[in-house]
Image (cartoon, rainbow, N blue to C red; front, side, top):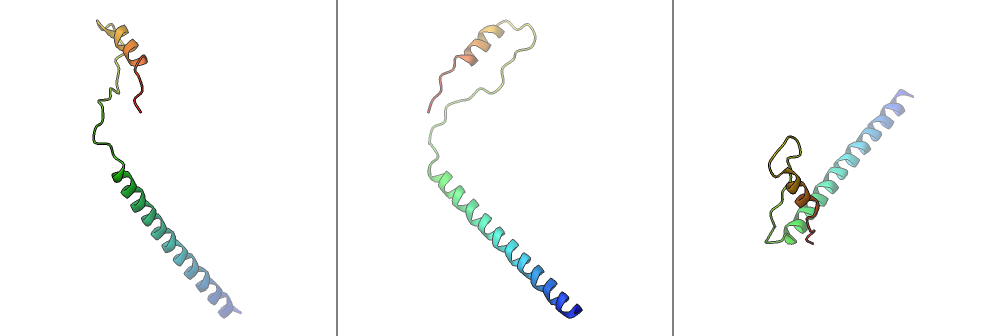
Length: 76
């Protein structure tokens, strides 16, 4: 009986190992395909982007800086 159990455990762990390697290969192929498609569609020009706006304190142009941030036009 223990021989059958040992064979079952061996088969199960072998199957799980092969499944893990298959998943790793599928993820690797998907990442390569994703990166290849991303390189092909990159634009040659990217406009400047402002990420941080000062909103704390009493800065001379704080309110106008915040207004300009809220009124930006989206480029697509």
